[in-house]
Image (cartoon, rainbow, N blue to C red; front, side, top):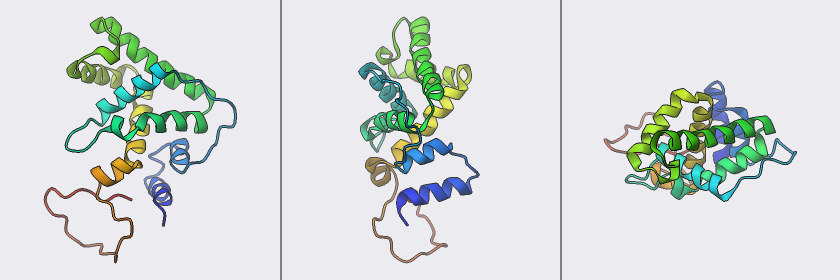
Length: 176
């Protein structure tokens, strides 16, 4: 079974915990054939910063290093209708504007603690944007080479299935 098929099966088992367009995006499908919104380099950089707050660099590379922002842009363009794209990028602009209002600087120029505070504020102030951003960031990260090999245990050709194998303390969760 291919990794993308496994992600689709897991999503179905979780009762659609992942939005259908996100799963389609992870599988490389294009659901939206109309032209999507143009994303500026500034928006792409802002997406990378927000994603890096959600999955920061620790002992493993973070979302920015994995290029999660490129995944988010592609999935939004290819799999979400224009109204959803406008709402998503509107939420991104609102986050930047709220940062300027609260700290006098755009999100990109905030220090780490201020960025975390703004993301926490967004979890309640603009919950739909935050949930979609979090979903796309985690999906983009864990389906990237960095996420699958550095953050998760990955065997390109797994051996025999052993459903009762104990996990050692500190061992990584297995990639799909």
